[in-house]
Length: 451
Image (cartoon, rainbow, N blue to C red; front, side):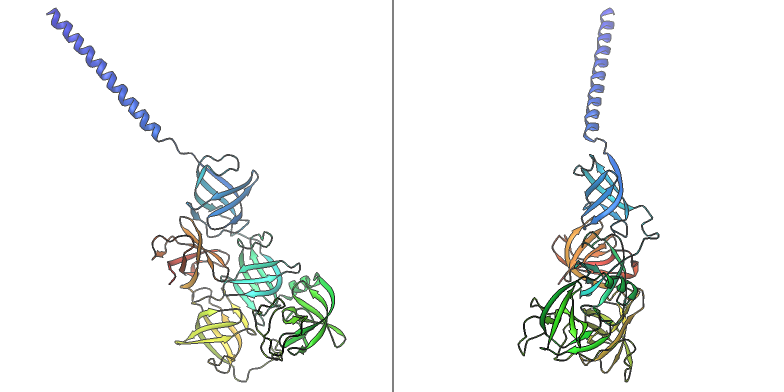
């Protein structure tokens, strides 16, 4: 009996030891499992946006400047304008301003980026314009290129090189970098702003004979809105006494100072059959055909013989032409001297009203006004084409053929192409009704590879 009792005690002790061993093993296994899943550190940085390129942002606060890779982040803001206050949420370890150890998960604004934002103005003369961009030259020679696709246009006498342009925008221009500003309005007859800029115009003194490469107007000042005092025929010569920073030339006409836009003047006498050209040999954006300039026309100075209007859908546009579909018939008309009144830029899909004299089928039809007062509702399917530059989890940034850098929210877009990569050319259908003029992230409806 005593032997049995000892055996039972030994068995109990063995079972206890075995239980302790198993428990210890389970705890050790659990510890290892927990060690495999360390706690993920998270954090936030608040600051002012300096630059957004599509897959990267530069942010600044009192501690310094941060460069974040946002290619794996959700962009939770309709704006990426320099000067906006943002919050960057991240996982990982942030050491000072060194962001190499973090993964950005989201970018959002502080909720006040649309409240009472200060509107600023840039003034210069027109260098070039396309469907999506406009470039002006300031008095100091700085070239600024702005997006013109989602803002109001109020152009009094058409778009020609040398026109004074006022660009109203929100955001901060860094040198000549305008990528992260939102344009509100483009105007060519804000005379108060223009006069202020003209007073600070720098004119380099010269004394030389120049020749007209096309029939051009001679004006009282360095602006197409100034009075026409004469004209110079193609090949005609005139004495130039100054070169303005904005591209105009000061000349002597009837013993008085006058002005001609410099792109139509050259120091070399042109051959009799020479085509209009700039002094560097390239063709000007707005060609002035013929040996004599077209009759000068200022607002209200000409009454059309028979004024007509037609409404159509925009198919394409350049600085001086507009292609529209009017009842299934496509026309391309010259709008270089026409007034432009657009509520939201000139985009494919917009419905415009053309006021003209003559026949729309005639390339030389005289167009007086192109008007679109419908704030985006006619542009629910605007089309943009460009090469993909960068992307985040919910946005894609493209570069269009005319040099516009545009970012689109693709959260609800129908992506018809699989595995779209950087460099691929795509067509993006955009709902312009979903974006206010001061917003610079547009809403995509469909993304597909360009045919």
